[in-house]
Image (cartoon, rainbow, N blue to C red):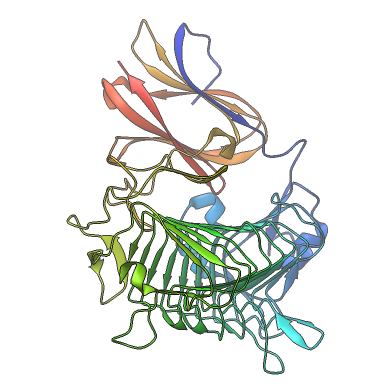
Length: 480
């Protein structure tokens, strides 16, 4: 690595965003502070609480601070750190609390949250592992398991509870949690986003995976629901709620009134590019979607739904908008017995979705990261190159320019760092295979030039991947 060098060059790509203004300190647990909560108490907005692997028997509260609390996963990208860094609430309440206007700049990254018992409010329990009220944090790379929200015969959100929130939950697993309403997740008066998340083996009466109540515009994308159980909505239950459900797979959930979806009063969910298969509670029956009360509807387009339109039980209560692109063909999963819902090469769901779907003035689907002639139905793309997606530039911190010296033919990356942080930069071929690892280290503020050997980057197209903390982006570059 060299300091900035002057060179005649052709600029290919520029990406810029700043994570925080001013100096951001890192507080290490347990080296600097003995507990995670003590580190949070010592932190200021923009700081990072970095937690060493181990089991921490505590419940934590972000206390209104927009900080990052993360395991060593944010340094290494090694997912084993998620399983090895555990917040165990020991049935003393939720593992994590957000209730003081935290924004999406408040980040919880890379933990296992377990044995949470929820927040007690008026005799009821809310949010087994995560209680989020009037806050909108970013929750990333979490394993939320073996939590419950049960009190006096009722409770909401076995894994997580959101109220008055615009939280983001992504790249996570919500598994083996239970509550009366929303075995995995319960949302009230919120517009949350759930992306790239597996919601599995949760239990409730209503909404085995997720229950929405008075949530006008939540968004579910690239999620997998499997093994969840409920009477009303094995995977998802909606009451006065209209989520958009896009590129999602519901398989082997168990619901008596709607294996995939139970749609209550004044609810109008939109289902696009998704797979709903084998979700009925009783064998021999097919009830993928159930419209439970009046004043509701379901819009379905470009889905593979077992039983087709006949699998929707509306009992004359609501409206069914069965639009273009829907099919009723076995989706050909890789391993149905073990609920591996990757697609086989001969799956009818490959290239059967739609990138853009507009309903009236609402853009319900705008997918750019797909392979082939059209997006595939369901959570997984068949030809997904190691999960590398061209995310928008605003996802990245700092800035990078890719250049080629016209005299020597050498390629360089000019990296501008605004705040000290660990960065990974690598080059991949168009199949997602690593060609060259450029760097993996912590950089202080400054400008750097990192060389890419010409022998490693011959003529053609490549992906440049820049990772900052838990954010990873791949962008196309060209060598000539």
